[in-house]
Length: 444
Image (cartoon, rainbow, N blue to C red; front, top):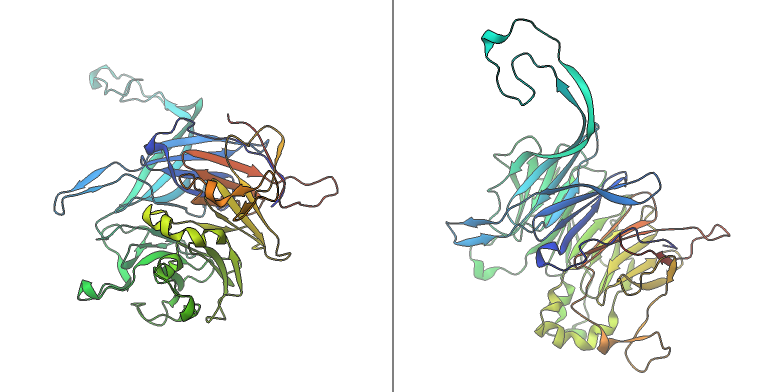
């Protein structure tokens, strides 16, 4: 990742409902969707000059109440996934804890006039007053972007939905909760097929829960899901209908002498992403991000320390519940760079070829027009430089959990609380990319 600039922040006054809970580019990168804790979806479109501006905003989910279980169902958007475009309209899936919805987002720049049976207000005319017939015509109008729900997929999950993933066949998708993964057809809302079920007969025997699931980008029969024990399973739906028996198990052996009370907690996988090539799996746990080769199950081919300096802080992080934060990870378009979030509004990038890494900060305090973001360094002991940050001064309330990378260009979206930052890569005069340098611009 190289130089770039921030296009916008949004929601400068912090309301808990405005906190961004998911970020996702579409397949072309022209559109970027965000969901928040208030159940809203905001879609940004890239303008010809390169900036992203608000394209559409709509309320996707409302708060509900389950009277059978006496539970409130939050409106918070957990995940958004775009469907591949097949016509001028755009389709996306959004989900809260219980219900997945398919939305159609389309443009309307013409309106019909000259109806025979209705007046201009849309009211029915008195048929006795109609003496002639006319052909309705289309008249230009101001562009209107409409978002309409096309399907509602409900009543299939007893536990909170944590993942949705569109299959490469463009006809099916999966939804996963803590114990089950269901396979849906996009045109059928009243039934789904259960493909993974980890629920034991006796809940006291429960030893792990599903944390995330995703389809392979090219092979519609392959899917991966990770669990709270730090394992990632690859399932092949050709082998059997119920994928409780995995095809491959990706797990790194832990030295028994290094085990502690926190070992299982920090090893829980919070995100998993297939590479664009489909060859590798990227997993994120609390302290590291790992790259797995699908052909090698016993250990990752690459391991990157995200914030190893927190090893001594695990006890206080456990007491504050920060140790349960779920950080996402993402690939760039060529699978050569990895990005993930951290605390203090820092985000980390790792170049797989050069093995270089950089820590950068996304905050209003450091983002000024055309300024270059300086790499940050967190130190455990004494500061070596004035710009170094002590691990004791990190603000654990400021965290970057949700990130997204443009599928074709070096453009990244960073969600920090209720602020959205969009950085674009810029070439240096010699035509090279300098990973640590990222420019910024003030909020709109």
